[in-house]
Length: 142
Image 1 (spheres, rainbow, N blue to C red):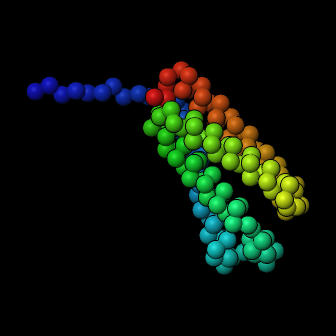
Image 2: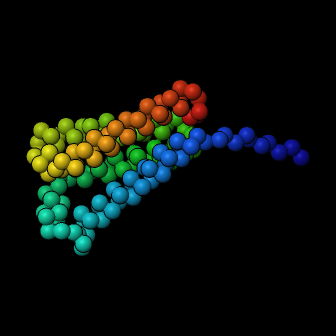
Image 3: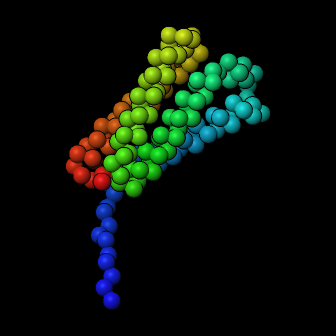
């Protein structure tokens, strides 16, 4: 009996780092939604901020989380769609930031640390997009 054995591809260590980073990130997003809809252990100031969130913000945050989760799973499976999923998440985040900048008092609501963490998050996501593009170009992602 002949058994076909597919050779296994070794995942680069950075693939694992990206996967775990986005799993933790998505977990944070889920906890954010829990705090928004069930504000049990939330300070009164945060509760007011959460009530002022637009449906647009909640939908876009959920979409970004979904694309990031799908991208994390795709990169772990070494699929080239990971690049497209992370790129879509990046574009959605940029568009959300632009909409919020022009329609709300976004910088005041975020505060200094919020702005820095937003830029850090976009920087990481941009680096992940470049990394997945490179893996795709080198045919590591199929």
